[in-house]
Length: 413
Image (cartoon, rainbow, N blue to C red; front, top):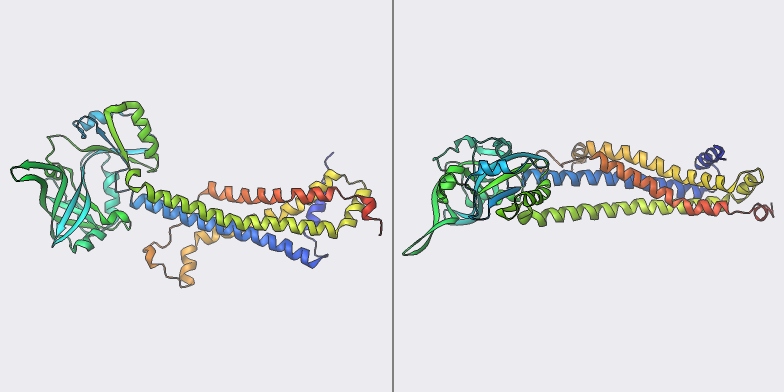
């Protein structure tokens, strides 16, 4: 029958101030290792989550997350009707028409490749595509984009490469919309005036070019009421991957779909791989601390062989000895994990203030500083994993303690 004496003795041994000093040092070292490992893993994971979230907002917020076009003519003749045929998708927050094409922009002898995006500010759900542009506006006026005005919004990196400011004129040359003449293929091109400059602080800045959808349709010589594709927005851009499969199942080969992964998949795969590798390396700290728990318990068993034998002669069963040493070892894991949890959350929540206090230069991160995003599920998993790993580390030493024979241990006492 279970007796709480095993827990009492295990906690008593874990708090003991007497005995082998080296054993106590190893035990405290193991606790410190678990504490540092849990705290470091929480802090670094939160920062990596923040960077990934910023990439989603700054890149996937302004580039097409999921586009749908008709397979027959690689455009959409009636986007409202097509939108009605597609039921609401998981995490969908908006669906709008767009006119898009690869192209080149020219200014003062400079040529730069761009992705031309024609957006319609008057359609339903239009705010989901214009809001990121308004939030990251640095120069100019977005409202200048009206039908027939032939104004554009460009990224800050692209503006620096072209050396242009709001009010300057650039020439936009589109890959689509060209016409054949006796002199050969003449690409679609037109002069546009820079209306605004936005700084998304991401790779998108170097090829971002936005204009009104009507102007883009005229540039590409699209038939009346036609658009290039139907563009979907999601609360989590990663949901676009599952939504693409759902649309293919509903509409089959009648439509052609494309997601952000074709253009930015390698970037986000690299970020995901980096997160896993950093997490693995920091998890090794906890693993080493767990091995120290094994060493500390084995030394305690050798130091307390006579005490174990006496407890057995008093009626303590082997199963109780097993529980006693598991409790003693797991105490380090629980205390280290809890303190590491509090330390990790505290440091992560005030990371930028601590960096400023230490006078660490964070100018490369912008005015907001290091992005921090703490996820409760992830933090809980880290803490639970540390406790479970420490508990597993106690199994062998606890089994060895339960195998001590009283007669042999007390033979020379």
